[in-house]
Length: 180
Image 1 (spheres, rainbow, N blue to C red):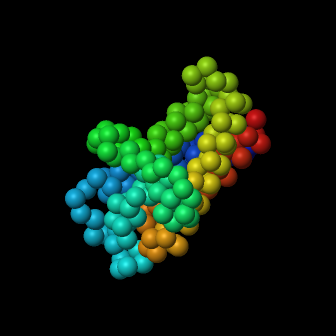
Image 2: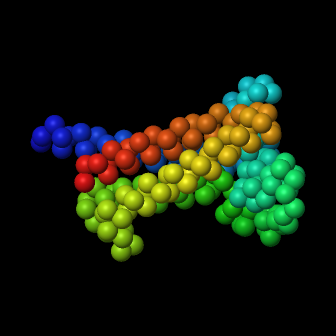
């Protein structure tokens, strides 16, 4: 195998590892969101507390409307998706959506490596879609980092790890796009 071929294999493997780690972190964050109390190993004083972040109104997609209404002062209707039950609340948590995002990216990269379509989407389009998904994820992650630092004034270490994995995924997908 040529050095270039071996390097491509490492990129695919690295991307799969990033996806798997992101899925594991997301599963922990889902657990943290729905657990009765915050996990002690994720709490390091007032400045680092996953429980505060994961139990805040910003821990789900309707948290963006909460941010606009209460923090920015824009007159938008508040939508509380958790009022529709546990299933809807589960499906709309940032952590669950992150898990689904990285599950899709993992399936996609496996198909790209095998040069196979996924859901009828060709290899080149899969990489473009992965790049778009990761850019959107990064923008949303930056919004959440803002919330952590300036609104909640506490940081979720696992959330930051997830943000780093998003950045790594983006770097790797660009490296893969250059190889095709």
